[in-house]
Length: 383
Image (cartoon, rainbow, N blue to C red):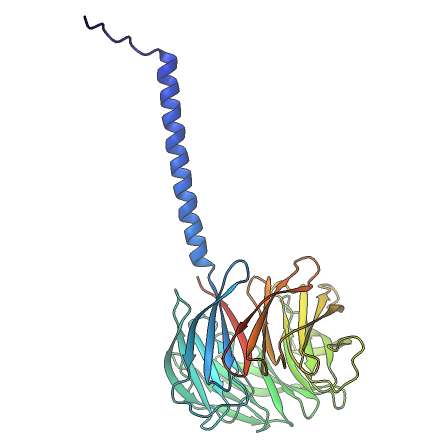
């Protein structure tokens, strides 16, 4: 005899429905989180580009959240045979083109398209440079390329074509001895050129619409005799600029007046480690994107020196120095401000450091092989 099944109680039905609802909700949330995480991971991919002078190529690395670097490509310079003294790099503001300056004849600007998903480089074309250029930089609108010639004692302005290839120089301007860096102000209204051998920084007004330079009034900023002004960076608030001097190892802080482009020195400190007694040979300088910490490299001692930046006064407090790659001509900081990568011209390697977000101190994570004579690092985060 088959007995009829008793109908479930209201409480049992409610419990079953509630369980099913919770299960469905959890599934939806997990799926959504997975999708969001995947999108974020894709949006946060960051790459490091290392210019190698003697191997005539660029080492491309992908950097993970942990600071771990993974080699993804070695991009060779098409049409270049002889090694150069260094390989300055510049990335256009739209993050689509990387340009490398070749310092051996014929002097070229080699343009690469940056794959917006993989970060890898593909050659677009080569354009002429007016001389062997120690430094190159795009203006803030990505319309022209500024360059400075150390041996040629000149700076130049080259238009950038729509495809990112450099056109013939529109202006070539004689400078004092040993032009080394030539960079625009944050608002793109002025361009400044260091003259290492003449102890001065030249100032130019920049007409972005016309793509032309004219001397400012006054036309230069003087630095101490035999100091050798080399590289400089602007603070993210646009109120200060920091200048490293190759010959005496000084790091100078200046106030910056955006309306006139005027520099006013407010402090002078050093990139040399405590107890140093040799011949200074300072090289590069960079600041974290948030403007809290500044770093400088020194080649005689193979060190990186860290400073804390006072956002109100612009003054620096030295944090300390750490050893790094041999002859650290170039280094840079990733866009998150959490990692610093320094390369050594004589070690053919790159060291990556974690930046302590409270103190600014550097903690070494790992070293990596690069091409031969690496001397320039550029970071880029792709969308």
